[in-house]
Length: 163
Image (cartoon, rainbow, N blue to C red; front, side, top):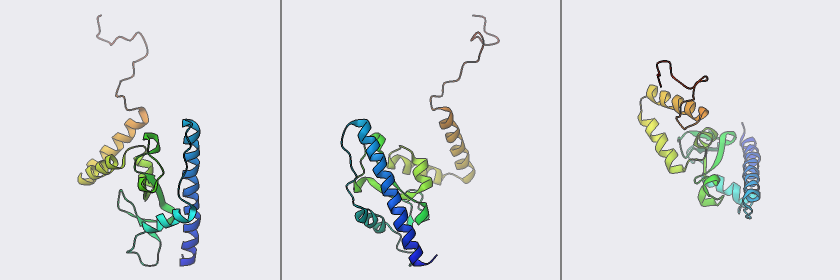
């Protein structure tokens, strides 16, 4: 990919990300009844992203994910709210972080410090244990976190229950 193609891809991706955040802000504003807006212009938005660009990869555009520290190209970058909108966060420059799409999706509505602690704990484990913990957590999340066992159909009594 030439430098000019990378620049064009960056312009398109930055516009898409800004529009996505504006859309979420409008939805949040409608739900809460409070006027909420993204304070950065498209030019300021691009400047924000460029300020966080990895400096060590020469002419190529790339970013270091603030959570997993992986190198991410233009198409894979995402902007995350350190304090999620669902928890009262804002889209102010100080609350935004550049990360990879994978980490943004995994983080969900966790606080940035909690997600970083979780990532560090997984990083410190051996690969097999980390994979097992992650698989179990995702399984639990899909089935609900409550930990309450579902009652079996029937009369509600166990096989050896005499009461």
